[in-house]
Image 1 (cartoon, helix red, strand yellow):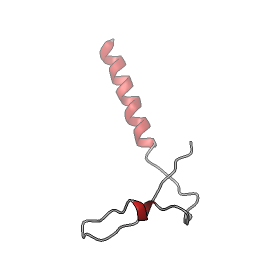
Image 2: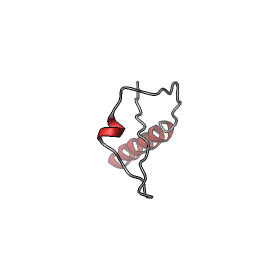
Image 3: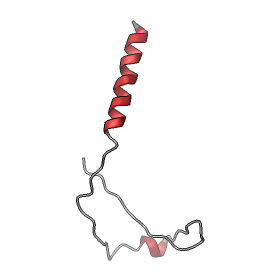
Image 4: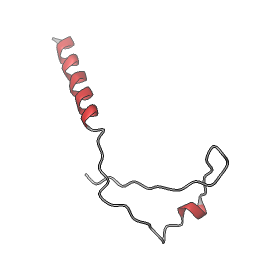
Length: 59
């Protein structure tokens, strides 16, 4: 009985995670007042400054 319950939980978790992998971009905008890129700069593998992309999930 315990093995069946564990199998069902794992199956449900696998299906849920497989279905949760699809995202849709509804809007994209420039935040002119956001200073994160200037105050906390990051470098890419070529030692060049890279962009900051902030993602907000609304659920």
